Image 1: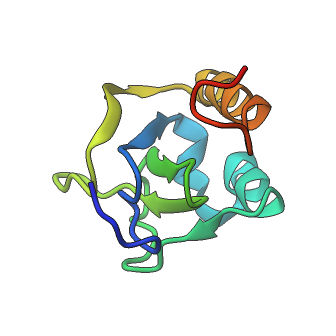
Image 2: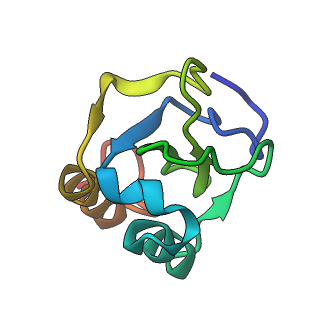
Length: 104
């Protein structure tokens, strides 16, 4: 876990999202949704053509393109999730945004 707010692993592990549509790169609906919702690219490397996964950090709203054979950061739960599953996770985290750790 990194203490650098600009790091993909800031505050926790990132969610690893897998979907064949991510092969479309910047034009995929999920990448568009991320940008529309304030997420920024980590910018340490570009899109790897044809890679269907992405790391998304909910704490600092940074995403990093996947790269075959390279673990960019530890993935939340040690497994990938689908876009639909990611959206469920995102909605849960948004529900508690700004609240104290044990406040519901």
